[in-house]
Image (cartoon, one colour):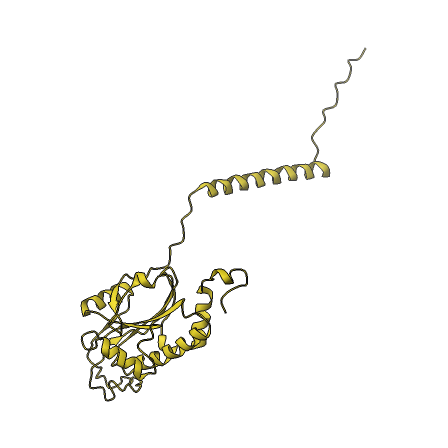
Length: 250
């Protein structure tokens, strides 16, 4: 009697169903691996974004002879410029702008939330009375402290402006190069003929938020129109309780 035949060996075959099942299993493993990687990354401490620079601390004298400190201005948005009262270049134009800025800020109802600051870049030659004369010439009443023109001892101004705001100013000899481009001059009744030498300086317009952090720098402050300034101020205007449910200040 012949021996019974051994059972036929069944080989593994890739059917469409098995291919689908294997693909789903591999996909699940891949998703799980990605999840574990992301979970490990989320557990790592994340670096926080560096806060915006804080305005320097100062106590200076304004055009009325009053003492003004940086801490007393906290809570208000500060529009900061740097002016020499004998300047015949950008400074007269900035003064014109500041008067227009103030009118627009008041018309917007922001006068209690915004202050215009200027720092005197010629403290050796110009004290508070000169700063007040400069403001009057360009149509401002010095008693109106929406625009504060600040001064102090020269070493202190150097420290606040150069080291604090990182704005350079100083006296340099005029260029005698034959190809030098003549600088554009504006009329300044305090120095109509340029008898008073004017320190060279940078011309930024800087905006600090209510907490004293830098929020915007315009490299050429004399070119910032009123509309452009208001557009930059609008997102920074804090809401008061009466406006909290109706929207942002007008």
